[in-house]
Structure formats: C-alpha cells, structure tokens
Length: 421
Ligand code: EPZ
Image (tube, rainbow, N blue to C red; front, side):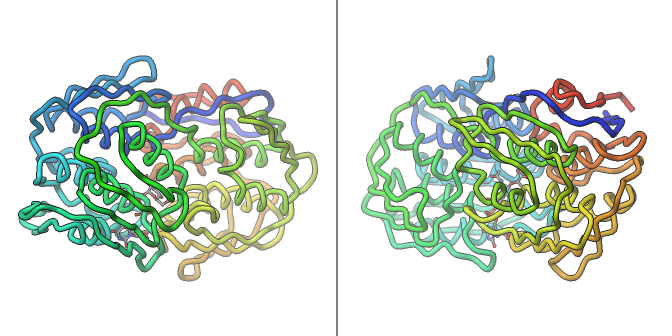
C-alpha cells in the first residue's frame, strides 16, 4: 500500500489542468450498454473506479478497453445481466448497470451495494423508479432481481427522497426509460452536471430526452439506440479541490479545463471568505493575499454547495481564525475526516450533522488515515499548510478519484511525493 508524504508551507503557484469527470464517466460507460454498437468515450480519467467499471462491463459480456484517455465499449448482442458482489462491493456506482441491463435484456441481477464509510446509501429510489416503469423487483440473497415480466411502459415518477434528489437514481431510471415505450416524466430529478452529461450522451445515442438540468426530465422511449462518440465534462470536484488548495496555501493558481459555471456555490463562499477569483472560458484564477474570514456552509444538491467538497472546505476553515459552521445535508454522517484533521491541530466539534470549526493559526503535520476519497483530499490540502511532515495513509481511496494528484500538486510547487509502505 502507498502513502503520500507532504511537507507543508509552500504557496501553490502556476497552472494545473483538470481531468475528465469520474462521476460523469461511470454512468456514461454503463449507458453504452444500451446499444449493441461500439461507443467511444473520451476525456476519461485514468482511475481505479474506471478500471472497476471496465472489469464490470467485461463481466457482463461487453468488450471494454481503456486507451489514451478513451474508453471503447462494444456490448454486442448478448449480455450476461449479472453484476457480481465482488465488483459492486468495491464501487457503488456499479449499480448504474441496473437500468441499462433491464432495458436491453429484460432482466438483471445486480448485487446490492450496501452502505459505506460516508454513511448508509440506500437504493430505494432506483428501485421505486424502475418499478414505476413496470419492472418486478425482488431482493434475494443480497441481489436485486429486476424483471420486465410484462412490457415496460413510460410513467410519471417522483424521485425525491428524504435527502433530496438522487444523482444515480435519476441516471438509472433515465437509462431504463430511454428504451421503454411511451413517455416518462421524472419529477424531483437530480440537476447535477453529471446527469446533464449522461442525458447528452444518451441523446447522441438516439434517445429523446428534454429537461435535463431541471427537476423535471421528460423521456420519449425509442426502440433502439446506436453507439456514439462522446467527451465527458471536466471533473468539478477535482477542480474544486484545486480551488481550495490554492486558497488554503495563499497561492496564485490558474486552473485550466474546468467549467466555471459548475463552481458557482464554491465561488460564492470563497469570495465571501476573501479569496480573489477570476473566471474565464474553461479557466479560473484563484488567488489569496490576505487573511480569510470564516463563512458558514451547508451542503445541498446541485446547484448548492457539493457534499464532495465539504471536507476540503472544512480544511480551509480550520486555518481561518474565527468560528464557522459546516452542515451536511446529503450524508449526515460524512465526518470521518474530523478526527484526523483534529490530529493535525484543528479544533472541530461535531453537533449532529454540523461541524463547528474553530480556526487555528497553524496545523502540525502528522500521520493520518484516509477514510474516503474526499476526506483524503482534505487531509492532503491540510498537509500542504501544516508545519513539518504529514503522511496520508490508505492512499487507495485517493486513487479512486484523483488522477496524478501528487504530480499536479508538485507542478504547483508543493513538496509532495508517494512512497511504498
Ligand atoms: C453521487 O452518488 C456521487 N457518486 C457521489 O460522489 C456524490 O457524493 C453524490 O452523488 C451526491 O452528490 C457518483 O456519481 C458515482 P445520491 P449517489 O443518490 O448518486 C439518498 C464521490 O466522492 N438516497 O445523489 O449514490 C442518499 O443516501 C462520491 O465521488 C436515498 O435515500 O448519491 C443521499 O442522502 C461519493 N435513496 C442522497 O439521497 C436512494 O435510492 C443523495 O445521494 C438513493 C439515494
């Protein structure tokens, strides 16, 4: 297993390029199953989760290959509609194959993903949506058995849950509905850019979809889809992580290949805190010269402040003198990073789904344990300003979602490298 070793204290300066979006690429790769023909998906990051999805597509009988930032997928006529526990348990996004398999093969068996370190992660909304299209769902031995016993038909589906809309449930239902005859309306659909990207890919395959990016998506089922060439959007969470790192280190960083309009909630909070942000087309400059002011943040579905940047925001507020309150409304238990940040000298207290952050003057480097992908990113950016050396263990979490993280930070002047433990 690897660890990342950081010596803090250097201001980040220079330019960094954002990779393609993991959370866009994964459902799009699953959507390629909706046609027999080959699809080519570009701007795909080289990450462990992408490799897992390739393994899953192959296990389902599709040809799948990653080459030079492109994924080639040729599903062919016959798929084996069984997504095994071994793969689904390592990556929750595997559940995205449920909708496409059901639509193409009329039945699917997909292992239930289960919870994870950021809290319980039910799939009731995915199942409710597929049932509304006419699928019969049974849970047996840890697997979802979905079967279109009669012909599936489009329907009105309300997909709001206790924590708002669901990104992957919206995707799953949309993917099943594109090949289901009649009209489907998804109400309380997720509005995240990744859902919009998935809809754009499906439309390139021949699907009829409108309203993506709003809470009401309408789909007119078609008989058949064809393969498509597509390039995924830049990763807004990776981009956000660099924005926070620049602010954290009082740096001056130009971030390239990002979509600035995806960062509005982050920009709003950081400007309030005193960070200077200039936006251009696919480019942003983040600069901090003076002291920061504490700001309160609540995570919400898009266009609200993203839960996937909550830990990074907490790292920033930890070194901002004063008190800030960070409230988590998507995953109320997503606070595993708090105890690790506190080991580095932060003063964070948990009150239910809120973290009360008392900013301190300096952090001190320490060995810390990464618990999930975004928590790991927060520990790395805390390490960039901590006195002395920080060792982030269990780096495999980072490798799930950040392409070349150490080399990108090194090119900005950070002292960071990877070591074998
Ligand atoms: C996606 O997960 C992302 N993953 C997550 O990113 C991200 O944190 C999340 O959306 C929220 O933005 C991928 O895209 C692969 P949800 P998803 O369904 O779709 C509840 C990362 O670090 N819910 O939108 O699985 C759920 O418990 C990852 O890259 C139900 O109640 O999340 C949560 O409270 C982590 N029933 C809320 O909805 C359901 O059936 C939103 O979750 C589904 C979800």
